[in-house]
Amino acid sequence: MNIRGGIKKASANFMGDKKNIIFGIFIIFIPVLYELFGFVGTEQNIIPYTLPATITNALQNFLGIKGVMAHFASYYYFYIQLLVLGGLVCVIFFTKKPWVYFLAALICFAADSVIYMFFPLAPPVRTGAADPIRLNLFPVSDYIITAKYSAFPSGHIMASFLAALICRKENFKKVEILYIMNTFIMSFVVVYLGEHYLIDAFGGILLAVFAFKVANYIGKKYMTTESRPL
Image 1 (spheres, one colour):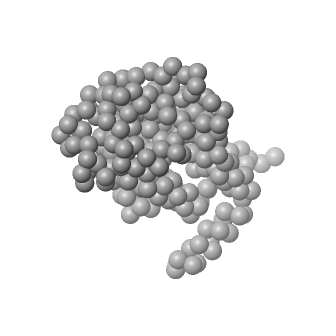
Image 2: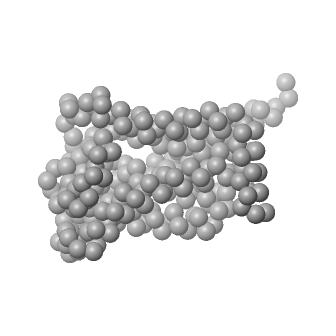
Image 3: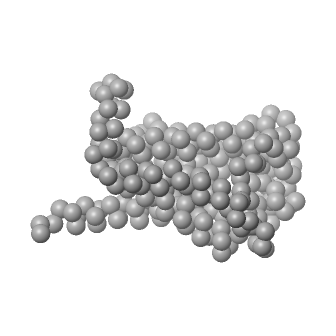
């Protein structure tokens, strides 16, 4: 099947189930809801938690805070993440049951928001424990980051690994490899830049696995219920 035929088939599948459209609309509003954290002044009364920036300091001392590596990490953190998010939506669009994976993404966002409210964790760059490499080299990238004390879990890693899990289940092998590679590279990038602690990367992976399993469980239960005779 050619690309045009694949898109046509995926579109028919997507539009053929109202749940895909409903959950897809919710997904569109996630960035809007995220930005609301900045408008409602959520962080003005927050007293964030902190952790030792041991690994970040070691990486910055070894690799430096300027030069090729610093520039690469800064731009990778911002631009590749946009590709990750856009790619995640595209991957979901071509699956058999898009609404299940949209649900997984919504669970990730909801869980991440709840953790942020009850356990606001300040990354090293917000506490002065590490050099703010990205802020110095690419300050414009910070304008869209409204939740600055939501280090745990890492949304970058969470989105990337969720995409890898979906690709594995749907047998999108080549795309899965890209997302797994990105998960490893991005884990290094966010820690080196001081945007996250290493535990945040592990937290992002665990939350992605949790959301993926819960969404698939709900999807199976719904299909079972739907197929039962009245």
